Length: 64
Image (tube, rainbow, N blue to C red; front, side):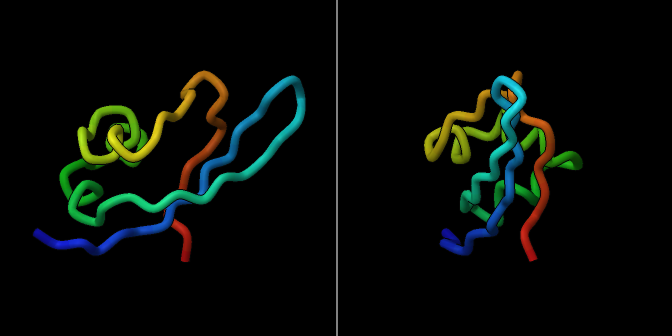
């Protein structure tokens, strides 16, 4: 099993305040989904690593 990871930047809003979080997810997980949000919300390996409050999530993108 590959241990390669990809960094994601997540932008959240909370009571009008914005803040970024950077997280690492398995590269293999990203390859299974067409949309990044689906990977974040559904992939079991990603869900084991983190919980994302999608109600507060404004954007998510792969970090360069």
